[in-house]
Length: 254
Image 1 (cartoon, helix red, strand yellow):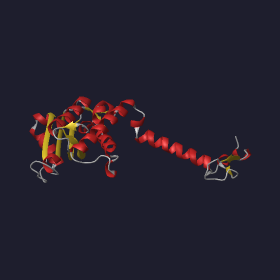
Image 2 (cartoon, one colour; image 1 turned 60 degrees about the vertical axis):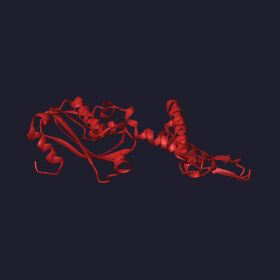
Image 3 (tube, helix red, strand yellow; image 1 turned 45 degrees about the vertical axis):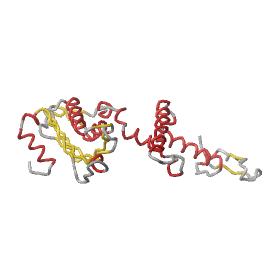
Image 4 (cartoon, helix red, strand yellow; image 1 turned 135 degrees about the vertical axis):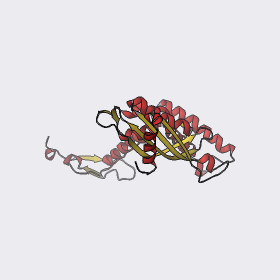
């Protein structure tokens, strides 16, 4: 249909801020950007709807609504127990923010390696050398104190006919780090997930993190780092191959 043959629609706005006799001409049908009150209200409605659907599923998912209610209530109790007033201005929205943040930081419970892999496994018979993705940012929470530990993870594997999408290695690390963790278990879980996904000749994982349970409390050692490693297959049985991997991630010669 030719838009130029359509007569403009006249919209009467009954908003109390406008004179009821004032008429606005909608030019949307002419293929032009319209700023009449009716179109402007519709734009705001659609933008609000899209924002909610993209960033706030807690308003539509019944299970999340229940979780949010329980968590915000618990947070208010905690604030009161430490001597704060949850009703003061700066803390009014803190319980809700905290609940959303904690659900995000533990979102790994609702995901799995199979889900994030999304079939990004490919046949490749030619490459039989080490593949390394190093210095991947990792953020997790200590299950003993529920405070963060952050650092990097480096992953290496030797293909055995199959390779994995490089970004998926980082996503596998995130699946397990977005849970309450200990670094030792996290290291093994990443290695085992890759081993199970592509059955490589070998897989090796090294994680180096700073633990805030040692920085903000307890011994309070700011510069302390914890390093854990896990090796499978040829990285475990062949010392030369294992050394090659550690040389690569530490910046040494191969």
